Amino acid sequence: MPYRRYFPLVLLPVFAVFGGCTHYYYAPNTLQTPFLREQHDTRVGLGYIGGDEFNGFEAHAVYSPVPYLALMANHFQVQSDNERSSSAHWGQGRLTEIALGGYYPLSNIVSASLFAGWGGGRVLNSYDQGARADLRFQRRFLQPTIAVQASWIRLGLAMRFNQLQYIRGDIDYQIGEPHISTIARIEQASPVFIPEASITLGFGMRPFWINGHLNINQKSRREELGFAGSTIGVSILCELDFFWQPQPGEQK
Image (cartoon, rainbow, N blue to C red; front, side, top):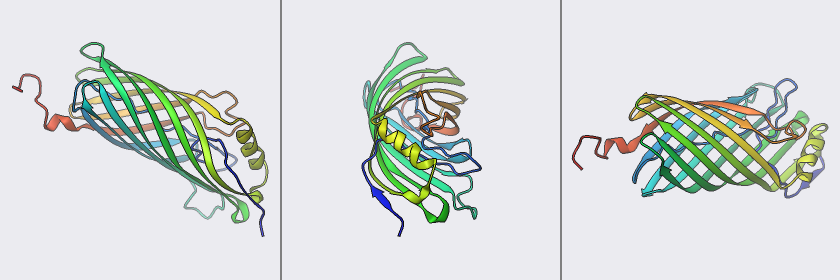
């Protein structure tokens, strides 16, 4: 019988990638930039996200129930490119998070926001001889953003400060090296603090936008911890409030 170790581990929502010699243990999801201006603003989005040898999808939503206050939700799910092949090496992971924050319009086209949130999910990695690592995690974060939106173009800049903790893990030691040593370094580094930065560039016209995202992991020592340096994404966003809120020039 393979030797297993069951333990709490501080880590990040890791999405291990098994393609060639690449083996990641973390990849940043998109930092949602909320382009909000007033009460009842509602945004939903769906898109693709990927990195070196892994890909998946994301879903985003944000709603302002009262002026200057908003609720945010994100879902992130990825898998290694070769998960469906005959290779024994594959990885998959998911993250769902919610956040509460405030926003404030600085001008007709510029707004600022600050969100604090919590998320949780699962990481499942497969190695040679059927060995696996099954980890459950939670994440807390603080995210300030600046959003600029004109008639047909938008720009978002965001930072996210993460503290991530794995609360449950089932590790088969047959995963071997260097994976055991990498996981041990992550455990030793806990709690893992990871700063991230993001830029969003979008084009469109209300209520639909096409956005491109670049998300950068700014953690030092990220290579020795097996963390991916960046992800890119493309999403379609809809401003749902467009269909029920009075538009400029209409009578409220």
